[in-house]
Amino acid sequence: MSTYTFPMRISSKPQRIQNLLQAALTGKSAHGLFADFQLWNRWDEIAGHMIAKNAQPEKWRNGTLTIRVKNSSWVQELGFMKQDLLEKIRKACPQLQITEIRFEVGRLYPKRKLQKPRKRVLDKELNAEELEFIQQACNEVDDEELRTTIEQAMRKHFQSRP
Image 1 (cartoon, rainbow, N blue to C red):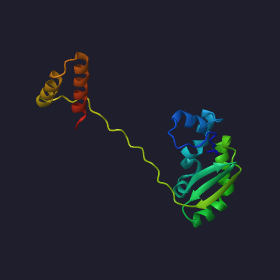
Image 2: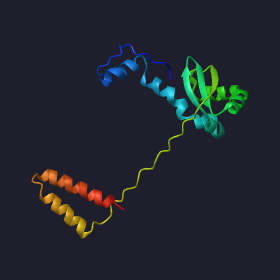
Image 3: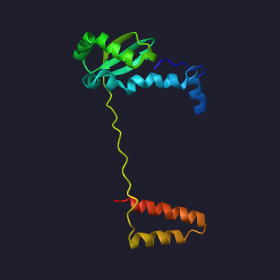
């Protein structure tokens, strides 16, 4: 996560998102952007479960990685493990060219848990009441293509309900 500079002037007028992104990402290839975040994405694997639970990478600038830790005890503990941790990080993410690690105490952010998408059951038979409701709603639509689309959407809706 290197430092980005915005070459355009800050304006109080609305700006096109395309222009803002282009200004923010000037000089960075897509590969370079994703490489920066590899450390964050693989932190549990690189640092190990116990360290990852109590420390998180905060920022990376000019070869120095700042790691936010839960409390001063962890600052001391990781200080003893600094060289070993640095070697693991260099091995896992050589493109970042990290030369130094700093530890600072701060609030850790909770990890987001990915929710599994709800399985939709589309094999469910519709009952007479549901079929009649769909038929009544679709009878009022004159356009045949629109009527078919609405009917399909309503069938899927009723089939996906538990």
